[in-house]
Image 1 (cartoon, one colour):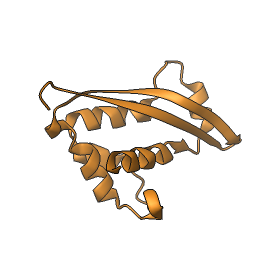
Image 2 (image 1 turned 60 degrees about the vertical axis):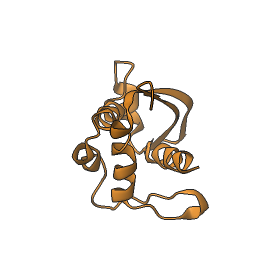
Image 3 (image 1 turned 135 degrees about the vertical axis):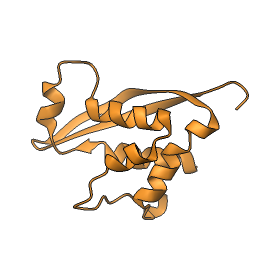
Image 4 (image 1 turned 90 degrees about the vertical axis):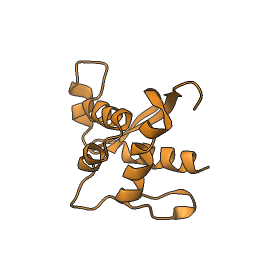
Length: 117
């Protein structure tokens, strides 16, 4: 349940206000996601923290509409490295542009771990 909560929070965080950037990218990867992915794989809490906006402060909400702090979110994602995380892949399951200035992606994440973990 906790994993799903954080997955949902991450997916909400992927609602980007700059749809033009997503369309302009000529490669099949999305650079902000790749930075996040690299930070999670490295267990790099500083890199993860730097990806969150400072002003305005992010509004991260979990199940039951409970507020989750940036520190809790960063701790959750950066902890996977110590649990044996070896790979992280994403598949786009929904891609919408509800308005001209908002582009929303919903991803399914697959985490791969070392054997025995």
